[in-house]
Image (cartoon, rainbow, N blue to C red; front, side, top):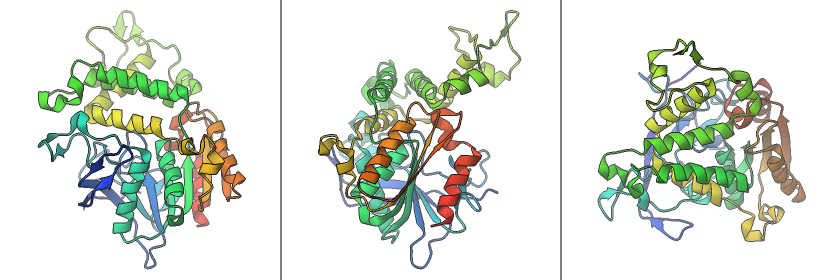
Length: 381
């Protein structure tokens, strides 16, 4: 059962110091809320989004078809995170392209879009901005902070940066930092964008163009890492889309995904190009660069000479950590590092490794065991 929601904008006039040494003199955060905050303000759940998601976590926009929130299978009335019980908050991170202040917005110093001049932001910067929004909503302590992938990193940052303001932390398909392989994938994707002739050093807004070719390739690279080998083989295998010299029967819209210079022969090629084309229509290239850099930089153990247990010693929250067997981008072993560090500090933690075939994308999908684990955890809050 769906419900209607509306985006809200919160303005901040107080400067936000950033990890890079710069600051934002003023900024806006786009957010949505679902459910009702109780009288004691003790039922608030903050959702942290991953790379290409936003504050639109659940519900749909009135009058807009196919506008379901990106985690609508998880959050809503009667869902695992039940908005009949909890007051759920979704916040769009700084630097994003979905309403919060970012590269597409006007730089007060130049009266032009920030573009490549938008300051570098980190996971910790996002959490600091979220903390201000939560405080403005009158919430002293969050019942839970929850997120998957990059969202899970924000949950970790919340639990370490504001330990007395988080009761429960739910970290899904995440890691305490990126492996060299993950950083490499991000760098190849970024190079695809910055070498696009339409990138113009990040100031493409002024030229009236979008580096769509680079964005397409970046998304294709990313999407490969989100799926498991089993899913790709099951869904696509080596199936061809060419029959007797012609493309298989598809909709005209789908056939338009073919590039004029090279026809698509394999179904997996068609699928990746379809995903790339969709992404290039709605996502901002500068935002992609900013967010993947934030992913790369996140490493709370760095300040403790790599000792994660020491970095997490300040944590007071109870944890639920979930991983997926076929997630090779954020493998179960990375979640187990978090579990070990929490146990080293005698913290309460529940850990589940879900046997699911979907790869990293599993945290967004309908898996009965996964949804049941989350439902059970929240039922006892």
